[in-house]
Length: 164
Image (cartoon, rainbow, N blue to C red; front, side):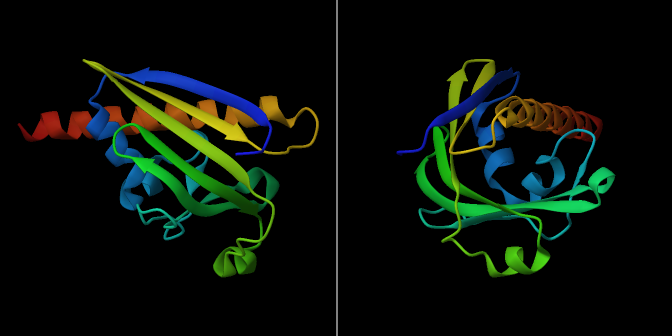
């Protein structure tokens, strides 16, 4: 990884590391929560082929700016329940997203997981190049993604409790 460090965000969740791992690696779950809290995912844009070289992708609808933010990449390192690393490419073009050109500039993403008993710690770090001053905006955005994950997990727990 030769890209400069941009930022990281971390959070603890009152849930098992296996549950967090599944939420982060299962495409159907990613599609539900992988977006800032005030936005929504694009249906059928999410993929997670959990293998080295496997594709991950998502789309986030940003109606205030009349665009869809598409992200995609390939998994580069996987240690179950401990570490996910992948590249991250960005486009606002549905056509470019469909093609998924992996030769375009990309960022490197590192997601660390740690089992802390009743809690699971997650740290998301991004490496690469951003225009000056955009690191704070990207960091705030990822904090919102983690809040969306927390809301998803709470909702899922409530559904399970209702079934009991």
